Image (cartoon, rainbow, N blue to C red):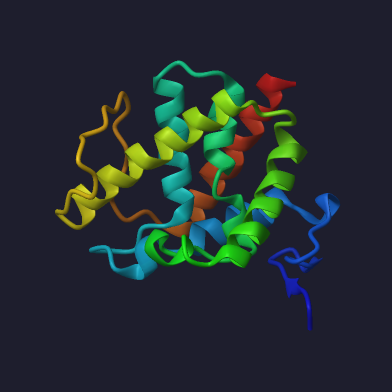
Length: 179
């Protein structure tokens, strides 16, 4: 079998992704159930809540709705591939290529033409939230610097259904604003 069956029962081909098969409900559902840090945090903390925290930080910084939506969707490919820890992922060249193609299709579907500057802002926020996840949920500092946050991220356990619903509501709201 060369496809995965998604939550919405779409036959999705991760190695040959079609834009029309990428579904926001599949992404929201899967990310709400995927645990960050391979499950090594103090409690279940999903990729979905991480993505929401990133979007809220972008909003608090006054970034454009495109960047806020980019923050919400920046790990969307993980809904179809998995969340692999950074120390391992950086050694998986083929995985990185597959992830890059899929994430690019996700961005192009909902935020076409993201600039390098917009992507830089998205990934700066991703790192900032990652830093605070580790200090809060591990008690460990993972960078030599302390990023500044303008929001107050939630690092508590939140039921997956609530995360999924907030993810979808945030997505719809941003898409309406972007037009």
